[in-house]
Length: 248
Image (tube, rainbow, N blue to C red; front, side, top):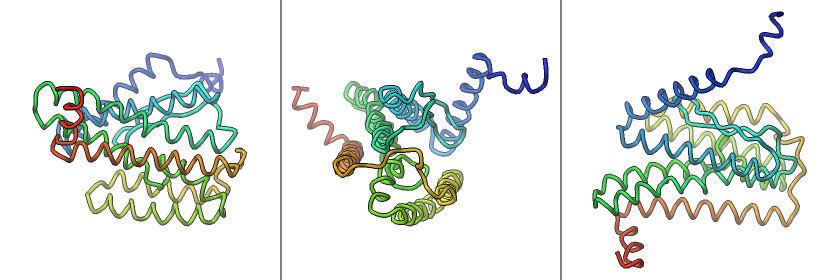
């Protein structure tokens, strides 16, 4: 068997599983070291649910099978087997993560309702904020993939300039909070998007109807994430009001 044949052999299921466990442990350990065990559990669980939302959309829109992987110290990624043939499909895949990802808050809300311990709302907050920050239009976050095509339909340079400007703001914000790895991650994504020139040369551009729908879907996802953050930051009062509607 030649060396070229060995190089072409895909990784075994055992090695894939080992890497998944190691990368998840590295991510959880890093978050736990920085923010505590509750944040580690909530964010890692939130990342899995968020990325699975992308995978569901990838498969439903004919771009699968989608694959989910954990990136140590950074988060996760969902990759399609085939690139979306239309920009509108790309928008829907991008927004599926932050919207579906909010479902990861349910166990933490449930634990808060059962125990009355407000610390569980902290876990829900981490998940809500994780999905909200992913909607920032800064490469390689989901917001850039959702809003990018709508800006490019106006003018390609509007997309590039806007993504670079927002990327710079996110990098400065991350550096100000001491999140150096996240800042580097966004900086590389922003610069890479500029270097690639035409960002989606393979995809059919948005129609005018799809442009309006894309904007509406992005705003709906943004409002949902903001509402989720409010529920967790209101000290439980927002969630308590919802419980009262069901006679709790």
